[in-house]
Length: 309
Image (cartoon, rainbow, N blue to C red; front, side, top):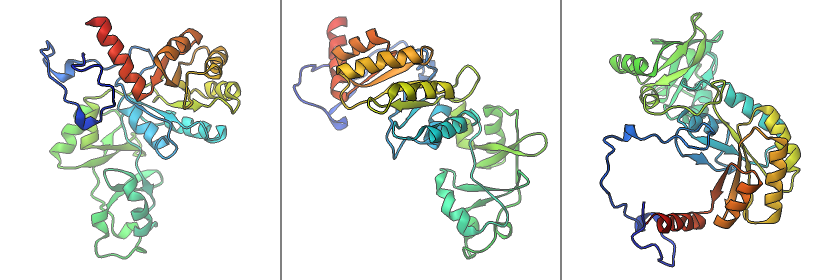
């Protein structure tokens, strides 16, 4: 990559930039390996920042299933983090986590939850077994107090637990179904697959740990006992620790990186809010990777351009 005008002296927005295509020997986008070289385990270069209103357990699950990583915020109490980490680690790397309700729940209950999933469906279960599917269309003509048993679709196709994403897509597409519950040999609900999700799973590989569980990351601040928090997070099985502050090029940040590295030697440590010079210092103190600010990222690109031109 090279910048045609590397020294503009001002910032650019998305609409200011045109990516000039160059000759390439790559015949297909599927021939490009986007796995990060840092050994963390992500298969696409995508990290969701630790923003309180954005990075939660659902985001962590979905992003990891597609190969990326979500950083949970630093201000979440450790007992809550432990619950979230355990929940994400228990999610299936292929099957989605469905919204479930019982047959005696009401249309109103379902409508309050249904938009938490892009596919817009609630699985109705009884004794942990799916007995129906409810969508917004099923609510037409019924009031919000009608029980789901009276409005749900009981014509239910299910998928076996050992199904592959390719076979799931073929089966759903062939039956003209948008989704189906996944069940174990005893008929108990394990998850859900949509035709779109099954297709995407043939393209993307999940970000998983050595035990085949989804990856999850948590942020650590500089002022709220970072060593104690990092120790607890490592014990929980958090895959990446992110030392985060608005301005990373400071002595306290570097000291924190070194201290966290000492108590969590086997957990990758990422450093946020860092500049080019500070990144080199952070690496020397034990950071495995650095998340630069947008302005600093441009400087890195310019430096690489000069170096390789």
